Length: 80
Image (cartoon, rainbow, N blue to C red):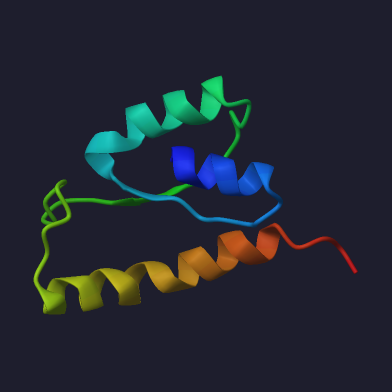
């Protein structure tokens, strides 16, 4: 989360992805960094929190979250 906050401060749109077990910590970092309403994505079980995943598991997670990552990034674009 802290990396995402730093990139946001630099003007680079980001999407933070954390494991469900880290949601509380991610929300706390966002809050103390002044980004209380920062939206992030969570990966949940059966995927383990340490992110030591097999290639097929990584592919499964990527396919599941890609539309959500795209949606969050597009929400950050200025209205044209």
